[in-house]
Amino acid sequence: MIGDCETAALVSHRGSIDWLCWPYFSSPACFAALLGTEEHGHWSIAPQKGKPGTRRYLEQTLVLETRFETDEGAVDLLDFMPMRGGTCCDLVRIVQGVRGAVPMTMQLVLRFDYGRSVPWVTRTDDGGIRAIAGPDMVTLTTNIETHGENLKTIAEFTIHEGETASFVLTWGLSYKDPPTPVDAEGALQETIRSWRDWTRRAKLNGDYAEAVERSLITLKALTFRQTGGIVASPTTSLPEWAGGPRNWDYRYCWLRDATFTLLALMNAGYFDEACAWRDWLLRAMMGSPDQAQIMYGIRGERQLLEWEVDWLPGYEGSRPVRIGNAAAGQLQLDVYGEVADALLHGHLGGMPAPETSFSLQRALTNHLATCWNLPDQGIWEIRGEPQHFTYSKVMVWVAFDRAIKTSERFGLQGEVAQWRALRQQIHDEICERGYDAKLGSFTQAYGSKEVDASLLLMPQVGFLPWSDPRIRGTVEAIEKQLLVDGFVLRYRTERVDDGLPAGEGVFLACSFWMVSALRMLGRDDDARLMFDRLLGLRNDVGLLSEEYDPAAKRQLGNFPQALSHIALINAAYEFMRTTSPSRQRAESAPAQPKSVNRLDQASSQSTPTSK
Image (cartoon, rainbow, N blue to C red; front, side):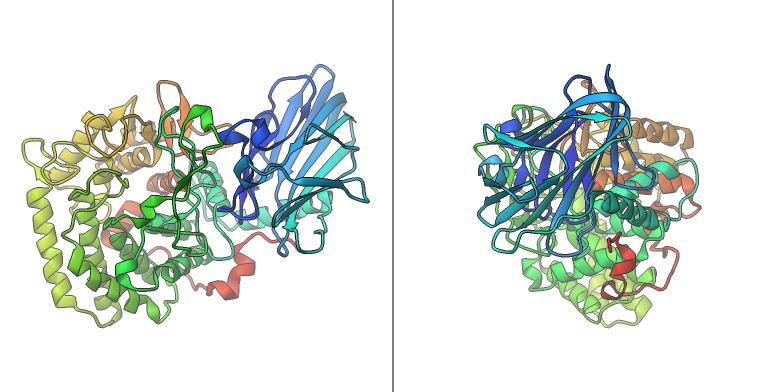
């Protein structure tokens, strides 16, 4: 992945950019070969002969270097997206001759609207091209001669040792003047500098500092810097099982990730980013409490209507390809607890709270008092019938618990007596209806005999202590029923009616949650072994998707996945710090306090920028 904190592109081992939504994360893709064929849009630069390249990120940056070795010599391909200085945005590719003389081919296939719209292409005065389709205009500026062929732009050239070829693709609005492209070499140096300035602010130590650093960079790259919202992933419809229908659009911001994200950022020293995320959360939730959603767009958009792209065949034939996400309209009670928990930890972490913060939380909590006993779709957004999911009820308990603590700790007025009574009622109900004494474990839903990996979070949020035998029994039941090759499934899709055909990989975030659980139960050797194995699943540049197929030994689902990297960060902190995220949430203990500027006062410090 490369990106500019407003969108991101995916680059293959063969030097092909096969996915890019321009100008923003949730915009239609202009390169969609990832979900189709090369004819649906891609941009490749590679030797005419040779094998796939080896890759690395330049240290502490999101600048990708691919080394191609051939019989004729070697070349480096540098790919990056400079931070924007205005409405236009750039994607830069620089070819550097390392050894010998290597014949190269560049092929650019622009297809707007998810691979459907062929643009009108004209030659520019400087020898580049301009492509227009509706509101979109893209220009290519290069020092290499190009020509058109079969609705593609082609260049064939030889790069010698010490030589450089540059290609700058720039997006702008078609009804504005043509955008001015950046200087490739100058933009490279500025992009490296800005990323390193940002990365060096991290407070890291211990054996896993490198893995945490890469995950933090990934999390920053998935942050929409205009608002502070963090997308779950820059992709849509990468399957949870190859050839299956569990294909979802993740280019939105989930409230469920709120506290995980907040602690990951605050514990690393990124309080400005944490504050920006908290402020996005507050803005997105503002409105009538009965209209609260479980996810929003990068600016807080609410209309995320789901539709299918029938002209794309899908990744390895995995259909349908979906745009939008119907889960935005589901009832998922767990998000009320996540929001309340995040707001409390923001207070404890020293974030300045807007006057509307607790009034909004109070309204949400009072609305929850009217609907907490309803069945819902749960944390995994099932598309079957609503159920009384145990984890949903646990997070309802968290919502009331955190509202009480916020009111009492900070002297804020609320219906504390009512909330306290409901908190006790819900706790009693969960222990009675969500626990199966015969199994010795809490279960996925009331009356169910199945377990669910979300139950690993019960002690993390403080519902019961780690020492409680019911918690230990639940962890052991999850190990017995949900482990596959040592990694954790969300639940058994073949035994649970979730409205979809069975089949998915192990869930990486759940596996990191298990690491934390083992660590908290004193099983340090087991925890470290699992964590080290999970790190081994990262791709060659340290990125993780949502799921993993242990049999085929491949990643599955949307990529890269913010929640996987957030879970990696928080699990690593269990080994790196005396105060673990698990204890922070359970005890509502503050992260290291620090004076935090509001987002509008500190954005220039929070985000890698270009001059």
